[in-house]
Length: 357
Image (spheres, one colour):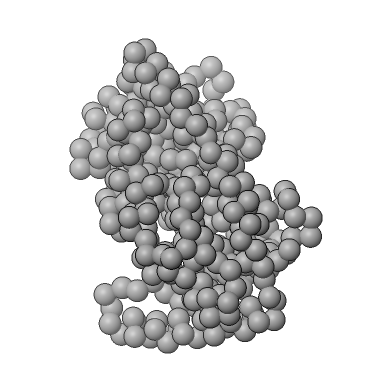
């Protein structure tokens, strides 16, 4: 079996794409994967290392820069033609789009070449690319039911959940000692996203500097873009900084409380692992989709929602202490989490695609 996969820009798109590929590998002995991504974002380094054939496309997200956008129109047209040429030679069984602007030319090329298309939308409010290409998909998988209201499609829409949820369960737990952590202390893990968040890092500074007397440890994942600058600060011994964490669910498994943005992948991992979490949606995302991702879960009592506009040292400290020490709050949220079913999203996607082709 031969599949084409396209996703890029951030781990929020790349990880679900990899989870889907892993599911195909479980069932297809002679699976061949061709991956289209950007020429200058993180997938260009990650995907080839995993042994998949990687084809970079030079395109950019559209902005308010008119000159750049005009140039990008020509780059997109060229990318569509480039992909069409590959598809004609390779004749894949299906093309799978998992988000990011790089998916647009790939899905358009697949449509023009009459190849079956599956796309997956991770967020409650779909991204620009998925909104544009949804009409060309044979099947669209969504994580949140709300997404259906924003997609124009003649194809089938199915509620799959997020591929990274069940995937997170398979990742081995990290060893505290190897990370420089004390075995007997509770652990709070704070994740600013794969690239990091300047605004979140700034607001976290006073909190992290103030917890030297607390009887718990903090692992703070700053994001690769911010680690060097952030590590210049002096922090207490119970604060541990990391730029990025390979197989992050392994760290989440040994954490007592998680503080995270509200990307769909992060939320799916937290739910699958049944972890107590303080969620701070990024206000700097398209259509404020992180807030809506988080709000749906907060309304069910599955997370503690703290908006960035209300984020202070005191507010964060109070939220973390509630989830660490307040017996009633912990018990109620744990009960809600245990009742939330973890969907084997990647398997659902695999089964639907098999039926399609």
